Length: 140
Picture 1 (cartoon, one colour):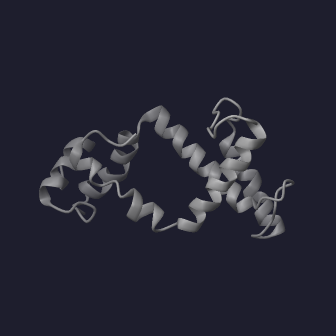
Picture 2: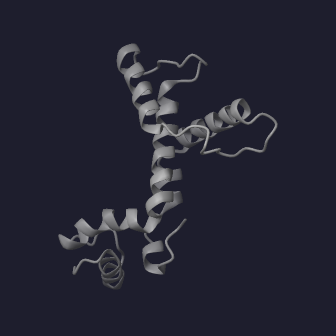
């Protein structure tokens, strides 16, 4: 979920920092999600059944090794490009981490070193930098 802290929440630029950066990749991963849902949850609304597969990192590495040995356009047995499956597995792993540790805790780890080093480039105002530093437990 998004951070509850308003100032930290302002740092989440999902549209600018994700959708605008990777529109085609997002579309490809979304199609893979639909294909996988139809395969693993036939007849059900689209959803990620997190209990059915919990080996994101091993699967990600297997697809990466296929890419390394067969080339960047290698395809899995079902004809789907391994690169798309790498992206899906990476997102799945990151979501599991966010589920377990919390989005705010993961964000804190990203901002803290920058704040400690005095780099406030990710925050728009000094006030925001102080809020992030406070939240991260550092004294910026």
